[in-house]
Structures are given as C-alpha cells and as structure tokens.
Length: 89
Image 1 (cartoon, rainbow, N blue to C red):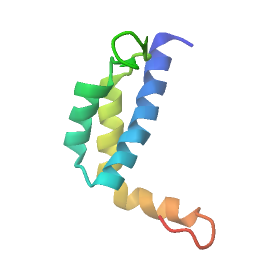
Image 2: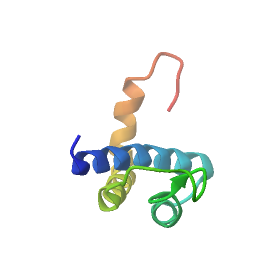
Image 3: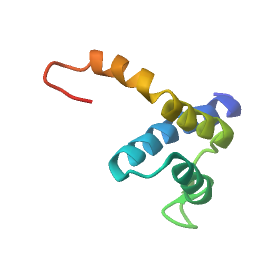
C-alpha cells in the first residue's frame, strides 16, 4: 500500500477512536484533535524502545473528526435507521 494510502487509513482508524473518546468522555472536538496530535501520533507502541506506528495523515484526521461533528445531526439518524431492533445510538 502506498504511504499516502496507509497514512489515510491510519487517520481513519484514529478518527473512529477519537469520536468514540469524545462520546464516552464528553471531550470537545478541538481538545481531542489536539490530544491525538500531541500525544498519539508519531509515538512508539510500548515506549521509546517499542515498534513505531505507521504515520497518520494528521490534517485528514482533523478534517474527518471535525466534519463528523459538524454533520452529526444529519449522520446520527442514518445510523439509527440501520441499528438492530432494540439497539439505540
């Protein structure tokens, strides 16, 4: 996979994690984007001697997270329609 595609894949996964974190903790979008940028991207797994994570397209990550938050009122009903009976958003 080309580096640019891999960086976008990593950004997409991080965006899902960030959105989940926002939902669970009530953290705002800008705080989560900043946290990921400052503390999660370009870090090794298991400390300095650990294996490095693949690079993420941080600008794409921020755009995705902000975009989902901006469009949440339009997105949530679409998700809710596809949930199994008895499940809630």
